[in-house]
Structure formats: C-alpha cells, structure tokens
Length: 208
Image (tube, rainbow, N blue to C red):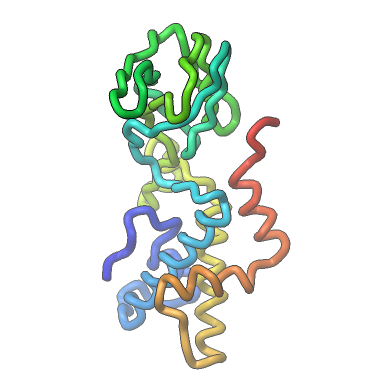
C-alpha cells in the first residue's frame, strides 16, 4: 500500500514524532492505513471537504430565480473560478450557457467559496454549473514554502497526533483497526474537546 495522495501528513513525520528511524519500515503499511483513516475522519468531520487542491469540473448547483443569487461551492478555499454556466433548457434538453465574466464573482473572504451571480437566473433546480480549483497545496518536503505548501500546520499536527494516539492504543490493546470503514468511526472517540472544536473550525459558518 502507498500513502494516499491527499493525506494530511506523512508516515515519515509521524515516525519522527514517535522516535522511529525513517529507515525502519516494519510498520509502514500499518502507519499508511492509520494516516489514511485519520485523514478521512478529519475531512468527514469538517463537512466532507477535501483539503488537497484539486480541479472540480462542471459541478451542478441550484440557484434562485432572481437577482444576486449566492452559491456556496462544496470545496474551498477556491483559488481559481474557471467558469460559470446557467441552464436555460429543461433537464431533458439542457442548454448550458456561459455567464459573462462581469455577471458573477468569487467573494474573496477568509475561505473563498461563495459565488455571487448578478444576472437573473432561470427558474429550476440544478440550473447552475461551475468549474473551479479549490483546496490547499500539500508538499511536506517544502512545508515552509508558501508557494508550494499552504495546508495549515494545525491540520497536519492534528492528523499526526491522532495517528500517534491510535498507535499507543494499539500497543496497549494488542490490536488495531486497519479497515477504513471501521477506523472512520472509532477514530472520533479519542478526540479531545479542543480537537473537535479545531475540526469544526475547518468548516466555518456559511455566512459570517
């Protein structure tokens, strides 16, 4: 098994915190599964957001029939809003038409994810479509270079602490949850109140 590309830390960083030599690979597969499980738990508790930067193509949303429609994109922070379309036809024969660049904008706040549409949106469900880039740059080899790595340090720190905590439980219990489905549930149990608040803060209120 290799570490998931969107992992919120690396096994090398976890091993360094536990005093395990990087060259010691005996437990690498187990640690990779634990990092993956901790990552899944954090992302699911933070509103099912994916932290690693990715391109989301033609995501469909429902907009109001009226002026100045506000749409909340599923993933954030948005770094590039590539296109915005509205559907003029019905679902069976959709007619997707691009908004002019002056008809919409990304609201540039702390965690950009809101798109304001200034033109009248045709009535209907699933009548808006966006393509955009969202998430943080993740490059742990260059974690102090903001041009390459923008993941908040407290997120990777939390992920590492979760793995270490479960590793210690493994030592005391003599077993480990290695299946992702099992780990995604049980990993929440050992989180402190401060950790839960930290994760909740990773999915801020829709409107401040």
